[in-house]
Every structure is written in structure tokens, then in C-alpha cells.
Image (cartoon, rainbow, N blue to C red; front, top):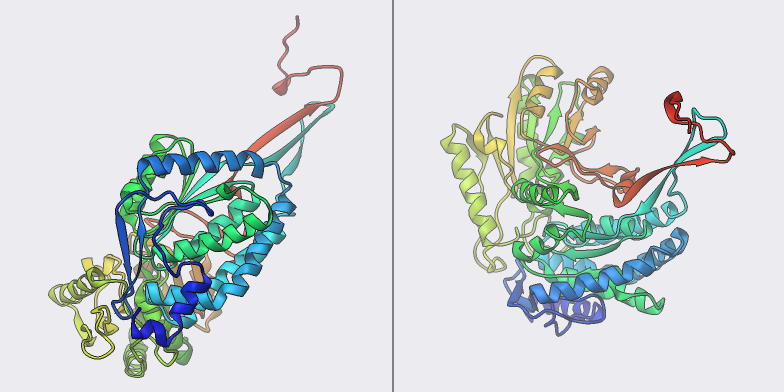
Length: 517
């Protein structure tokens, strides 16, 4: 293990999470099935090898799906509040393991330790939400047009839910899905990103403790590991009625087509190209805080990261200078060191993508005003540390239209009124998160109206990043249309059924149809 890992207690964290000597990559909790090739998890923090996992073969997968299917038959019969109790216990385990899991998230993915802890807190929060929800899985009662009849609708569990998650939130997004799916009576098969497999192992070990302590089937929570080929096992499987997939738009389109081809259901959380509109009535200090955290938090690798800052021409230079000054204060380095603001991006492939994007914005007519670049030397040996960059650009540049998963912020000038800014904000293929900075009530309300932001998330006087679990999370257009987490997002994990009960001795037909025998 590297000096960094030792210095910041990664050894102890791995040991606490049951992955000190990791060599198994496929598990339904208590057993290991992986018989495929090995994946090595290397930390972007220092380039050190953390461990290896073995991938899931087709034969392994069949064992997993059978285990999950058998578990579902038992799990679905448990009363929803009892299922909620299991989720409550899982949340309590996460409180115990929060520090260790937060460190692993930071070390394996590269986000700051504070963000790693925040991600585990999201898991705890969704468990709390799901526990309450387990007593509120409500339907509706409707009046029938036929006398002596009662109509109502209810929700039933779906079955086995497949989850494909991305590297940037290696544990929280899984929890968003599983906590709700479990209280709905579903069981889950999870394929974490092949870039962060140890986070998946750690989460599986934690829920396995809870299932074992309650004498419940291990197949309630299943794990498979590997690349897109392994993901295709679940997307092609008609035994899995719902696939929840988080990742790129390209990946989401492939998943959607495959699942639709077998008439399954997809919950898609895909790309974002998020903007903050800054009007003449904005609070500049608040704007800078929201924009800088949105642009550099998680090194620009959040789906809700701020990519575009759309600024009115009358305050453009003032805002630009304030943001540039803020960037001068950023500290880049080991994310486990809480004095640093920005850690590494995920791998050297992402570094290459970042460099190409900076070249492209200049080629297309933009101007770099905060220089980027790859950091080298002591502390940056992994080759994954880059400087957050700022470029002046136009909204119609092809590189601006594209989501680059890296800390690059585009400044875009608008003139006219807020409707012109909204057109720019909406003028991209993605529709995840958006924000407006203004103290003008009319501007704020217009932004939130049907003529305003076309995104699934629209904020006033906060940034684009940092959603709470109480609200449904997701976006429109090429973001995929899915909704996870809060509100009534639970309904996607269940099937709706309409029931009509006749409590008379007659059989009248709907619409007054006569059919006498």
C-alpha cells in the first residue's frame, strides 16, 4: 500500500469494510462467484494499486440471477414496514462505517474526503427517507360509474431490478435506487463502474451484514463486476423488468434501445450541460460561491457540475473578474487532505479528454482566461491532476454543446432581458440542472415557469450542484427523463394495478352496455 494510503488511514478503512485482501469481484453478499478476468483498481490520488476484483462470467451471472429470483419470492411477501426496518438497519450500519466508506470513495474515485463523507451521508438520508416511505406506499380510491362497485388502484413490487452506476458517485446512486427498491419489495442486482469496483464490494459487505443478522436471503442485494459486456447481461435479460442506468448519454441510448426491445422499463440518469444565469440583479458574492463549487467540485465530474456561466453584458466583467480571482485561491492536491479544494480526475483517459476540450474551445474561437494544464511533480505522480480552467466562449460552439467531464467552465455573455439568457440555457441537448442568480422576483418566477428552464432541476440563488434526496432527481432531453430519490420516484420500482370490486348480486356493464342472456 502507498504512503498516501498509510498516512490517511486507507489501510484501516479497507480492513473495516472487509476488503483488506480483496480478490473476489462478484458476490451476492456471502458467496463469491467471479470467474472472469481481473480488474485492477488504481487510485487516481497517487496511482497506487488498491486491489483487484474478478469479473462476472455468463455462468456466474446465471447463479446470481437465480439467487436473486429465489430471494424475491420471499422478500416480496414481507410487509413493507418490515422491509423498511431492514433499510433502517442498513442506514445505521452506514453511520458506523461512514468514515471508512467516505475515505474509500475519496481514494478510489478522487473526490475530496468531505465530498466522500457527503456521499455516504446521502446514502444515510435516502435510507431515512425510505423507512418513512415504507408506511406510505399509497394508492387511490375512485368512484365507479356502476352502482354497488368500488374502484381503487394499488402498487405491487416489480421483481429483480438491475442497477448500472457510474464512477463519479460510486455509492450514493446505488443507494438511491436500492433503498427505494427494497422497501417496494424488489431485489437488486448492481453493476458498479469498473473504475470503482471496491466501493461496490464495500457496500455489498455492509448490506450483507444486515441480511445475515436478520436471517434474510443474501440475494436481496447482488453484485456483478465488469465492463459494458457484463452490463449487457442485465439489460438483455427479460427476467429483469427495470434497469436503472446512470452514465453518459451514449451509454443510456444503448441501454434504452435494448431494454425497450424487450418491452422492459428504463430509469435513465444521463449527461448534463448545466448553466447558471447571472442577471444584473444577482448577488455577486453568492454567484461566485455557487459557480466555483459547481464548476470544480468533484473536479468537474458531477452530472450536475456547472459547465456554463451565462452572464449579462452589463455585469460581465465584474463577474468574470470575481470568478477568476476565486480560482486563484483554489488548492489542488490530495483529496484526503482537507486543506485542498480539488483532487484528481478519474484517470489518464479523462485527462486526455480534458486537454482535447481546451484545444477545441480555442480552435472554435474561444479564449482561455484561466489556463488549464496537467500537474506534475511531487504529489501529482498519478498523472490525473489538472488545473480547473475557464474559457470565454459562445453557446453554439460544438465543444460547449458537448459535456466534458472535467473542470472546465465556459463564460457566455448575453444581452437583452432574461428571456434571451433562458434561450441560451435551454439551447443544448441536455436538460439536467439549471440555476438563476437574481434578486428580481419576476426574473425568478419566469425562470421557473413553463416558458423558463427546460431542465428537470431549476434553482434560484443556489448553484446547479448539490441536490437533496427529498426531491426527485433527474432531467429531460438527452438526460434521459428518469427520476430517482425523493418525491414519488418510488413508483417506478413498482407496477400499478387498477381494481374493481362488485359487491352486489347484479353485473352491470361499464358505459351502460346491455348484454342480456
